[in-house]
Length: 275
Image (cartoon, rainbow, N blue to C red):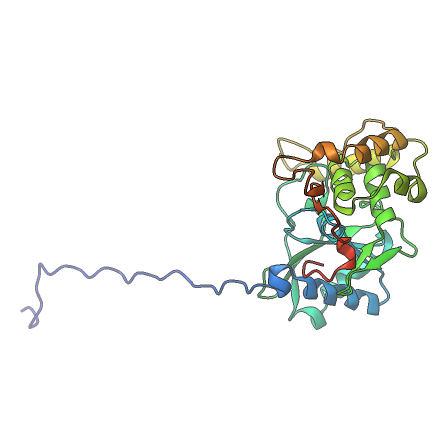
């Protein structure tokens, strides 16, 4: 006999739906999302542990006035200190603030950033990578740096500009010229304009790019430009072309360069939240 209240044709209740896990979104880092205080803490931590460092790449261009957008900070350390720096940054004492994350998956043009150690702020949208000094064409021992008014270390303007010239990084060179609004004479006084770009550096970086791509199945490998340029001719051409890079949104009646208003102070002399 069937038990009371048992209905042969009663519908079978569906399995309970498993709710998707919820995650708290990352908090916004300091200084309006720039993460300036976070990277300052990282640089001070390394310096206090005997490792010199400075900020290169997009962030350095922003410091010197270029209109760039930053995805992550690029922390430059001497080549022979990379492993030590990564070990310090991975230590338990820093685990509540930062943690290692996988490098970016897709190779970037003229860059080995997809091979670098990458870190993220714990619970905040703040990322940085550790860049060997040779890759940034920065000569260690000791770094020649200029600190922002917030205290973040950057290469001096001559060091940064020389690196772009020697690497034949034309986009960054033009951005740095237009951001800093330096003159042709400034380059003569502050840069090594003799000879050509550093093709030995290019050769070694392209070997690194090929090795990083081996066995990955990537359709494209972004190699570094191998053309030979005259440093002096290239400098003269790019610094004389500041006005030619102005556009309809940056008329020469108002703008000195595409990044600088007429009469504006040098950005690195101002306390900017981005640096």
